[in-house]
Image (cartoon, rainbow over all chains, first blue to last red; front, side, top):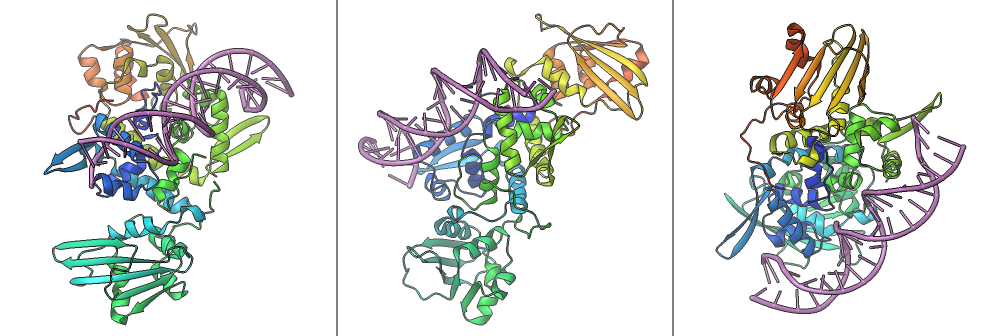
Length: 234
Length: 234
DNA sequence: CGGTATCCCCGTCGATACTG
DNA sequence: CAGTATCGACGGGGATACCG
């Protein structure tokens, strides 16, 4: 893996496995449940497939990931050691939720946001049957509108992200800025505050709109920062 | 700092600050209480001073560290944001303590081990006055013998590492291998097991020897691995 | 879909020497 | 003690093209 530190310290030995670029983000994707090469790519769109492949091999060699091939499908599954990295990912997340201030414009990405939302739809919260959600960003002129197609037939659930009109009437339309929805998503802003300030609006049947925020299980770190944290620059 | 990931995810934003080589190890040193440039170097002996300096500047720019100059002394002190990284360091440590198997020979380093021991001497556990501990490694031919000079005058405590005979009669002499003491230190082996198997022997007044392991506050992660963890290769 | 192969650049890092 | 200056290499990683 990365170059050795030649230190016995467990932190050093662990970081030998994790300190290369993208590795922890890949672990995050695996912890969040992605297993297919294509899924991993969607969560890491700026990582080249070559590098993704190399990282997966490295993690497999380190015993963190197991490559499984079944029925012509390849899946990368965390081993127990890999799953045990969840507290590491969580602690990084918690720190970031508290101490990362304003995001740069370059950190905002509708594709990634929708992809992240799609995998956190709460099966118990969405209505049965098909529900299409339309999200329109006021500040993404080149591609303002996205859709989530939720198909719930408990206990099964499928959620797809579309960047073209899926052709079904949306039950909820979200009108907001990419930054606002991202801030809600990362816990820097609550749904209520976003709605109250009208930076985010929900169009549709009012009872449905009221319940809509509950469709998504926000990452648990995503609680409002406990301190009025001064943003570290960088 | 490191190259941006262009992701809003808090894990990604945090890793932008931490994923470069040596950064997390430097944070570890700071969390453990080192503040002087020279102290930091001793804990990171294979890191060049140039790089250490650069990393400190980066951490300062990111708001994790504050450089303080007082009375001609320079100190690098964690900010609140920096101190808040302790759970990250801890989670990495915990993972490593459980999942890192055998250490490579290159990971063993008497200088680093003594340096780590020196800062974990428990002021309340050592005898008052001066106590010299001699550590002789059976497997470090080029430099087998090291000393800890502990000076306790509660509530003050000073501990020095010597690689030359400090000229005072040791009260305890440790005879073991570098690997054995390292394994005790990282929690892969208990003092009792090491003593019982005679892989580690303590020479000196017997009551003193019995209490000797208690002189050191093992890092709290250093509990025996809960599972008979298969070593990930790597 | 699930990857490999190749290529090249640039930045990181390591080493060493040197300064106030 | 507390760093800075300089320099070279090496390889990580980005981009792109390609294969089964």
